[in-house]
Image (tube, rainbow, N blue to C red; front, side):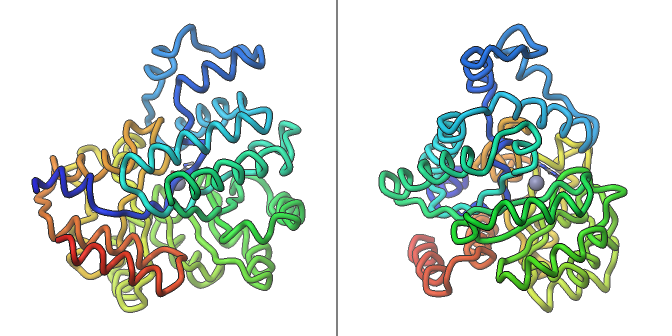
Length: 333
Ligand code: HPA
Ligand SMILES: [Zn+2]
């Protein structure tokens, strides 16, 4: 089996995927027509052509605007169903999916609308594709902590359907410490915790996410290498990093994929995983991220195997399931 075939065939989990960031230009166009919402584009091609970003904020501006076409339950169903169908094509057997409630509630679209659409698609995919999915509700860090408290209260009827709570959006100027109180409550309620840190922000934000929020995983975290003590800590505690190579390239965190540090972090013994983040905005789903790494770095089958196993080890699946998938991978390679 070639390296590319191995990437495509190996069972994988995806742990860092914003469902709103999987909205295709085609679906955005279709929903804008359905709801008579004017878009600042004249065609599907123009939407795709607009996706050139200089940093995280330049992306977030388009990403929040794009989510404005999601109005009714079926829109959210279609969004989730399209992503899970793609997972089936890519041999993603388990996925932990982030969603941003505040992007929708602030437009008057409530939990009952998006949660019903998401859950219906997740149940269909479980039945039709045997894909398991967990939901991660993320707070927008550019908004005040009081809004996060309100969002947590609104989510209570769906608490059983939410596995973890995360923190995303504009990182610089919004350190994890801003959300210390709300994450104390999140922890008391028994949720797992993740946070974006060390994407554009410094290594000190990763320390804050660990020490002040009590995270189970760090999203991105690639700037950990600026702090040797942090590297040692992440390795010893095996705190996972959900790394997103094409995202880092598109948002100019790196200038060239050849500069990506994921394989050196892996070889240092950190628990790193590959993920797509916002695949329709960043030019590729999960397998494309692996393939982009294989084109630019000295990547071999052992790396692919280790990264696929890490995706299960770093997941919130029960231990027995993690073991089952790792055994499958071992038997295959
Ligand atoms: O990569 C990201 N970083 C922060 N917030 C986000 N929201 C969607 N994608 C991202
Ligand atoms: Zn992200």
